[in-house]
Length: 516
Image (tube, rainbow, N blue to C red; front, side, top):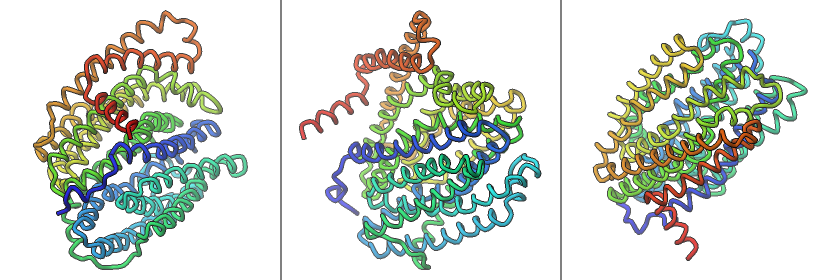
């Protein structure tokens, strides 16, 4: 067992902020690559095909990559912490061997049978898919390198090389944006797929170089039989749940592919907007948090694990709850500022704004559930979370199917919000309560109630004042800035007044850094 004195001394806040700053640039560039689609091509049947293919490849890749940070990383760190570097290296190499086989097999299927494959998994007609066959073939490269690149990123994180891992997230969308911008006028829609493939090739080369510089370049080879057996034992229930989880994500796009032309693209843009703050603010911190939770679990420091969990949850609440409220309230202005130019039509803009209004309320549920899930995974507890998580995703698929049939496109975000609030949010807390009794759940709930009250009061003030300021109503950007500023002017003093723990923690960290 690793003593506490041997654990990394760098604070979670310091590591997370460095990772967050670089990842923020990557998230913005990733979103910009989708904005370019709207600006240059609008929402058409061809963009529907590209967006669907992108989503499908990401979902299938995620069936593999989801186990990297969730299961592989804790097991790998445990081997490192018992001091067996050779065994840890053999485990990483064996894992890469099987991973390479899966990646190549998937890529070959997409390369040889693109039209037939996407005809089976979507509701597009064969003629439309045949017209875009060249575009679809590029996704063979996208799939294979998405899987391998994610694996290399997780290995860097295991070495606490968070900055190089985050830099790769910036590099890929940067190359993608430049490629689309340079080739759109020359090859049209095909530039989207070419750039997506080329950017991942560049990212792969960069990650190999960074792995070599940290002295941890894996080589695919058989071995580590006992550790692979342990991995398969832990991963089986989690993987089954992940398959159902990814099916529910894919089911969204499948149902949307049957909507009128352009509506799939409009819905996907709403998804990209509401997931932007999650990718921008939450996931970079959770990547660092996941490593630290695994280290504490490996060293059996359960009290410290519970304390770190409480800090993470409270900070997530004070950021994500007001952010989701602001995005829902200002969804028309946000979509107008981000997408109201180029070839994106007014009808598509209205659909995106309407969907964003509902999607935004899901943000805190997703972040809090992700943190709760990371605790159970750090403790290698996967059976109960996997079982009940699978039931939740099946319920979501059924809800989406019924809601879209009854209400059209808005049924998709409405069904997601319903299941996230009524099922996944409470279920995540139950997981932690069962597996980590040291976690101060009651304190976390108290903080959540305070944040909700402060956000509601702040929103009421904004809602009451803004109609009186007529000169900002006709200018979306000015309206958005004024609305957010007024909200924060009310919300921040309220947080100080009701003495939120998260505010006190942040203040203490800032003061400590200034003294240092």
